[in-house]
Image: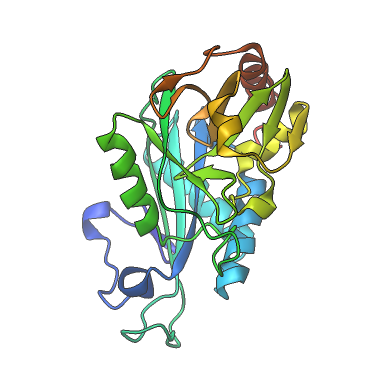
Length: 271
C-alpha cells in the first residue's frame, strides 16, 4: 500500500487513532477497476475525488502524485485484474468536528478483483437519502448509513440496497447507480435526485441513449429490465426488486449497455 508519500507493507502501516477519518468519518475516497495492471478512467475518478474533497474542504496532493501512487501500488502488488482505492482524510485532529492543522492522510491500497454474481436482487430500504444534505453527491467515507442499509437488504435475501430520496423518488444503491427500462427507453435518476455521479454511470450515459429524470419506486418495480452500475460491477442486471422478478434478465438494453462499456474499456484505459 501507499501511505503519505511512500510504499509500505500493510503490516507496517500506521494511522493515528486521532485521525479525523477514524474519529468522525472526515474523508473522501475513490475506487477504480484495474484491467491488465492499469487503473481504468483514472482522470474521471480523480476529477470526482477533487470535487468531493472541495465539498468537504479537504486538501489533496497533486493529481500526478496520486496517479503515481496508484501505478506503484498496482505494480508492487502484481495486480492484473483488480481494484485500487484512494482514501484522503482530514488527518490527525481534535476529538470533535473541528479539524486540526495536520496534513491530510493519503492512502492507496489495491487488491485482486472478487467477481460479482451475474445478476443482483435489490431491496428498497425504508430510510431515504437526503438529496439536500451537505454530503449529497460527495463520495465521503461516512458510510454508516450504507452499512446499515446493506445489512437490512441482505437480511431479506437481496444483494444490494436501494434508496429513495426525501421526495420519494428512486436515488441510488449503497455503492451503485441504477438504470431502468420503461417503454423501450433507458432511464436513470438525475444527479439532483441525490445520487452520486458514478463514473460508470457517466460512461454508460454518454455511450447509450439514456434519459435522466426522476423515477418513482413504482416505475422501478414495473420496469421491463433494470441494471446496476459501478466501477467494480460494471453493468450488473437486476433480477428482482423486493423479491419480485423483472421480465427480462438481462434485457436487450442491459446487454447493449454492457457491450458499450466493454468496448470503451478496450478502446481507452483513461476515457
